[in-house]
Length: 368
Image (cartoon, rainbow, N blue to C red; front, side):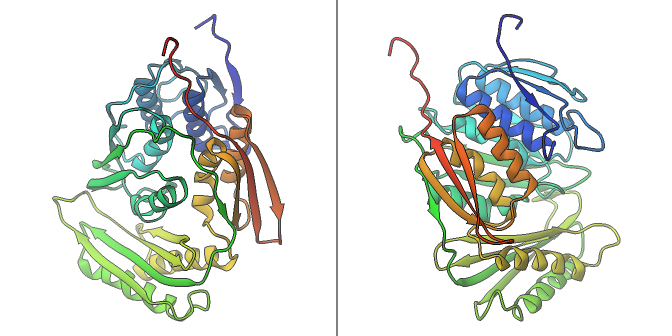
């Protein structure tokens, strides 16, 4: 790899975590830009690649025929030189409870523009801390990608997996490209909340605990001014041994609005935390995400940045206060693409993210 020219990426910039690495590798792959990421996850207590990050890099290495140096667990520096993206069937398994949704985050953009469909089998934790829960991906991210960018993915839970055992499995089908760039989006008015739905779950624990989260969340939401008179319906489920590995618990809530926005809040159970508190944490997060009046919540805010950068034309999305993850995602996108972002500060709690996207389409192989 000595003759390859690498673009340097400082891995400790801003949030300085795994998201910076994932977005860098995904954009590097799409744009065929070799990168060298230094000080990987410098913002973390234990810097360097964990098993989950190494598995994500290995997945993208396989699907893009990339060459790497420093892609193993514990590495603090990565050289990544992508080749030609090859659609197909791929599997990623960190052997831990590492998040399946973060494996999707690094790999999904790479396969969106292929002329054939692809399938991914992602193993690990489906409902893990410090990552979007798979239910968030299903209920918020996928509808957003479909409605706003025309990306209709099929994501199915084979089985759920929780910390520390992992063992979950998610199957993802990514259709062939429509042969045109992603469209820009304008999302400035959220609209009135029309319904709130939720999913409270336990595995390896009594069903009554899921019921407790369900009841607590519904009672709190029905008295919230941000929800108004919108109907609230939270489902409680006890996952059986066939559909989940190990024990775990949590809740995901999402509010749907008249303009097609979906805003969420979630929480995971943990030892020593009452299930009423878990429900309240999810409700508080949902209410906080509704209070600023933006069209996306704090988690979709940073996940949409890569797609806005790749889209054709100017996108504008109203949101709440910019998170450090979002600022980092914008920084990475501007380092590796020609996309230009502008933040319009409307108030202390409300912003509009503007992006002049690059209208990305892959170059055809020579001779075609």
